[in-house]
Length: 367
Image 1: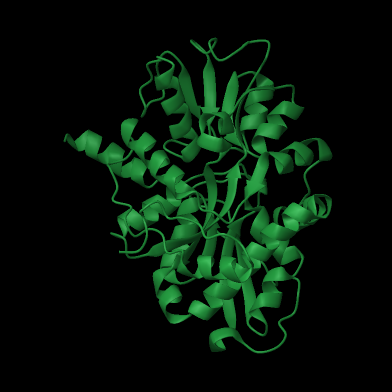
Image 2: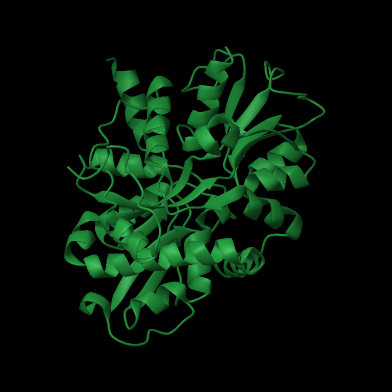
């Protein structure tokens, strides 16, 4: 392997999933520390812990922690153990926080979870639950692009080189017969890596013709006159693919399984509440977004963004492997060994206690 290709692969292996955040996700961003979870700890401490440190992003695909914290569902399960929450703007920062012990548990996308696991040779983290599926679309300027066969010569934005949406677009274009250099983004279609916070402005100014992006960025583009020509759900079996997982430090999982179980119980109960109270859940989500991101989403963005994301306890493990395979095929990632990335033992224990069916790790469970 040439030195240049080695550097490119190494760089790509560090690229995280950037999921359409308010304020967007940028490399090197620090976590924003919140002062409280909004509900006071009460009762006995779990595992004798004073606190559990939880990380997440301030966007619609992280609805579970945002709504669960807003409604006090996580604190209820943790009793007298306080929650120390932190919001992140980028996958690498959250992985670094997990590795350093600054957080114990985090909500994060598949790419940084894969990268964190493989870079540590399987020693840093475990995926312990799913959280969200879907919420990614190809939105275009209808004056410039009429359909999926009209992409040649056009410029399509993705959040970042090698991130999950970038890989998905490259894989889709290859399947349509378009030739694109994965690292430069040049070819029959220009793939322009653009920070989510910049994408709506670039779209309005006409410097991009469309974007393959997650929520709420996709809905922001539609509000600006864009048109969805492909919902990524249509490319996946049963319309399901992982967009957000729950990860935990292996050290914390080993030393404090009761606390991890309590967080997972809160996650499962929050997802059930979201499904049974969609209107209230949407309001709680926007209230929490206003708290962590400084302002709420307008209704013409919030409504479709909330609708397009499906909360799920199932980590959809088979789709994680497929996403990794797509990155390898695109030349952005060396083939990873994902065996052992999942430990769904506690999740399935919680699901059983809630009268729900267990979920599968697609053969990628603990060694």
